[in-house]
Image 1 (cartoon, rainbow, N blue to C red):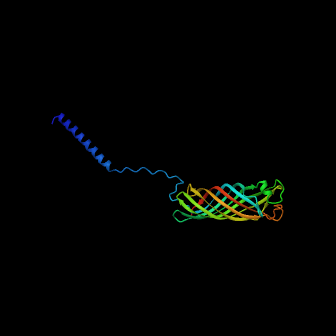
Image 2: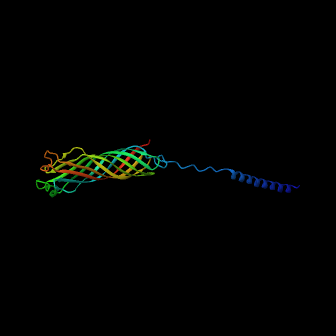
Image 3: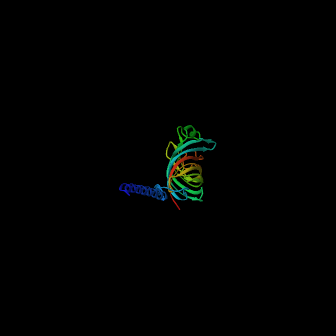
Length: 250
């Protein structure tokens, strides 16, 4: 074979070898599994559904009370007059979860209260022999409730109803002369409902409404009510408040 023929044969052999090698590489590459992309990082406060609502919790709350008071002396009455004010305090509670959405628990709170109101001059003086310009006033400095909460949790959202006992400070007075007279602890009842949201398994926020009835108390026989010794005073409140709670899981 001439030199030119040998060169052509060599080139043909090299070309055939290259194509054979490319085919082998392609076949091997087709059999190699490409690793999956790494999963995204999980936030530190991530929690799987459903949220664990069970456990002991404590927190703070604050809101406003739209109250109504009535002074009655025999057949005479001031009628309803407003006794409003802010509320702020602490909360302690416990939830029992059944593994589904149903939730049952107890909640206790103690709040400072700025509830204060007075009647119109004419209404108050109409109760008895009071000087012109006298006002009947009702005041409450604190309020506490102990309630059952029952509801259903839609994962992060808990909708509940609540009812139980209420106790509060009850003060009354005439102006003039001014000042208030504290009456014995007044016990009553409360009922309402609300909605709570879980930011994490440990931190929740709520908005709720409570109706509070502290019943009726009588004027003390010490001159606090002037000539209205037979008068009785009642106080009810419509409370709207929000709260922030920290929960300990079981």
